[in-house]
Image 1 (tube, each protein chain N blue to C red):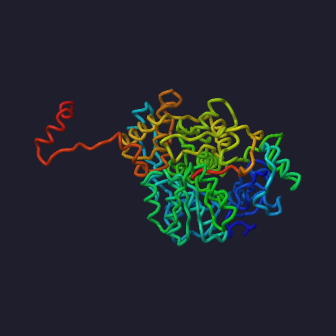
Image 2 (tube, rainbow over the protein chains, first blue to last red):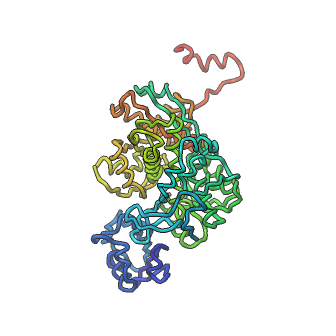
Image 3 (tube, each protein chain N blue to C red):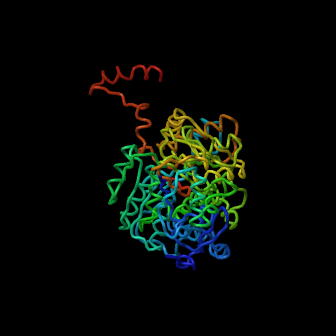
Length: 90
Length: 420
């Protein structure tokens, strides 16, 4: 059982260059905890005061978790989670 | 690649995170390594103060490069490429009169090479991309940016990949595809396209103008403040109406006016900045109405496709700017947008796209609410051309069909002539 987490390039120096990491399904917060165990410092980059930093966007199966339950959004087996910085218009 | 001494003698010295203040050199990055906050270009303020003057600007070329000291580029002028900026600032007395105001100007960005203000930001982005060693440029776009990138890249001989939502207006698709570019029509919203481009930007050696070279790109919008001031004889307007998609244009116009005052090029206060959004995608206006200092993302549903950014990266900064300048952020309905396009066309002879309809409709709304003192000097920023959003107005305008004889003309126009 796994969820694929896609790591944005600004974060890859912390994940030893890994662009994707497989995690056990759980809430976004739990996924971040798993990442932090293997790659210390990830939680601190993504979260502040127990919430996602305001410029961090997380998508589960293409949907922004801010439309769901934020950091408590549940992920299930086989889903893709994408972490991205907030981006701009065009 | 990096250049810690400023781009070949220009005044830009590095990038700084707007959120946490962390600094880096002039590299292709848009996101702070520490907090993911947005990176902004920093300048050597002493060098700027010593170098910039009204005289020096007046001696510059008749395009946005006259302000190059204030932009992240090198001192020598580009000698090839499309010429953006120095667009007309048009007095609009008939529009003013309709709204019960006395001093309204339209900053007419339809006069740019690809008919939107994007020509400014793309000009700056492509120069930075060249300095950073890129030979391929790209963008995520709701249409105007793709058009500008494809055109400017063609003029400079750079390869380009432009990504747009597949439901984009046909005019925008054609007007972009005609250039020497690869146009990708993505099955999704603009936010989906943007997300795809963020992922690609991490994998390809391309300069995505609104992703990895965004800090340089966005500086180009400051020229919209500089020009208005120069065109008003180095005086400042009292109020500006500016559309908000990501909030980048709005916040950079704020920055531009602030710099003019800081550098002593103008006296006075930063104009009140009124942001304009479409009700069908108004996360910033909603935050404003609810008195929040943060923006919640939304799913866009509006004819104003060029403003359809559901998760605006500069939303919070736009709220700050509205508050600090005594402005506001207002939304208008799709019907009001169409009326706005027609009001502008009828009173000024300028045909704007839906984003310009939004901006004009907001000016009307503010005037009707009594939020604008009639003697205020108001500048309406019209950012794009109506020829790119024909679908929005086609059902509301028509020609009178007649046969080639006088009787047919008279029959067709009798009711109108009777009223005249």
